[in-house]
Length: 454
Image 1 (tube, rainbow, N blue to C red):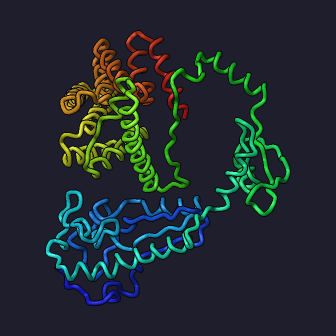
Image 2: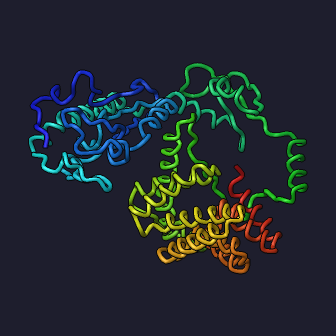
Image 3: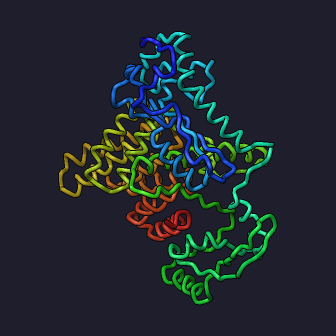
């Protein structure tokens, strides 16, 4: 255990980061952003807390990529942002100080040896040096934005509300400021409606109206549908299009974090859906019900491994398959009962068999096929409703020339996940086309494109 310094300055050296950082404090948004697990930094006074260099860069010590995304959101929303300067293992600024998790003795699968015998005095000293300065600054920031009990709206929010009242039903109006930002970046036509005076905005607004497509453009889309035999008309059931976060750059860490944020949102969406379904007594289709009620793993590192492996495999780069295999093996070591990880391992064996068969290497093909069947069936032993496992087994049966079994597995995958565009368009449709049912394959491709046109 490290000795506890007596004052704040002893905890943080002059060349170390401050206890907290405030970004865009003059931002006009009504929102205040916080990113409590933004940093992996541990002050030199505490050494490493017993963590290896690798563990300090994992989710064990911080939320990977969260700070970068939070900074970008701060700019996009024009909102102030508060970030602690040190790892949540020093003191977790997202937990009340009286809770054991405020000074974690274990994170994920890692024992934090530097926190095992921490005294009350050291806890208080860390709180004074890191926790309190951050929360005091955050409190002051919030107070300045709600002084006098007033709600603070950015001008952008007010302007958007006023433009909404000007627009006709189904119309889209934008301000001159927005027009200046998008005019050379989107292939859309806008009509200048001149300046308009609106309530609670002192200066007149320059207003633009989005011009909808011409008759010729609409006709060309209809002709395209006819030519390729696909129908993109609105379905009978209600539809919701959900697009993931787009990261403006090449940083894979931010792309990975954005995927995680989107997935967290879907998890919350599932909770809301379950409440609505219960309240309204709605009968969901089997596949939708499966997604709403099922869960994967509570081990975040296992989830991270599967997520990264999936990106490697979907990228189609054969050189990344060994890394994907290592990641899946790691996920299964962390959680042997993670059905999706077993399904992914089945997929990797399938690709190995596919390559082996193509090279005429019978021994390599047979071993990979056996591995694929084992992993796919293991996934179904854990979760009999794992649509991905059925899909991967369908491809494995197809590889073996077992077309009837492949079609049965494909139909089961479709029934469990009728809105999974990858399963419909990339797996089941291929099985159907190669098993003498091209019409069914085309039908699945059509639905997949309807679900995920991108």
